[in-house]
Length: 238
Image (cartoon, rainbow, N blue to C red; front, side, top):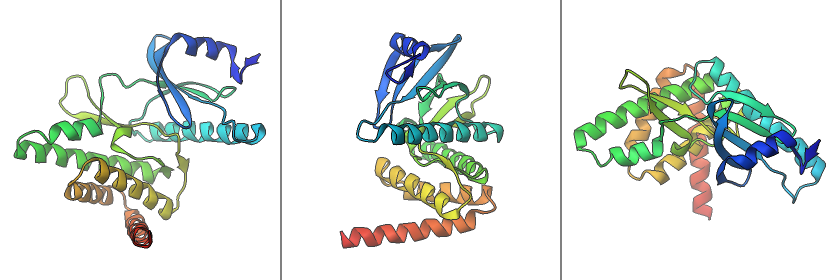
């Protein structure tokens, strides 16, 4: 029987592990599930919405997030594995990417390095991000919240090459529309340049890598330019 909208077993589990974050849509916990380091994401009820509408919208969001993650995994894109989903309480149990750092922190630390080393490291990173996002969009997955905080780097055993993981697919959905993918890239551009000032040239390299990795990128980058123009017009009016 559910208690406070959550299954008893999940409620008991969440009570025993550490809550590490709470946003507008969900609480995030860290613990061990079936012997594996796990991130648990729980979408909680929105009291300002009608209960039936809230349940329907929250269920749909949970389904979309899981679908996007599984679609990426099937395509060979590095995202957290889905261990278990409790739809009665909208709770997703995900792989904890242990030993990783955010791309945001990586860029910040790398920009303190000598100029030549800095450029080489960031160029490799921009190329990798472009390739991964091109592959994601090729699978018609729109992330919805692309930021350098929602990308993780982890160096694999026996190699110096870091694997790039995409995380936090809470706003993701499936779409083949170039405009949706263009907006996805626009969200990243705004977040990228506001978080990492004076990196316009680096973001351009990311876009070039995206374009060379995804054969349908031309229409998407055209839509990106349209969205940029609309954004500039709105800021001028404001």
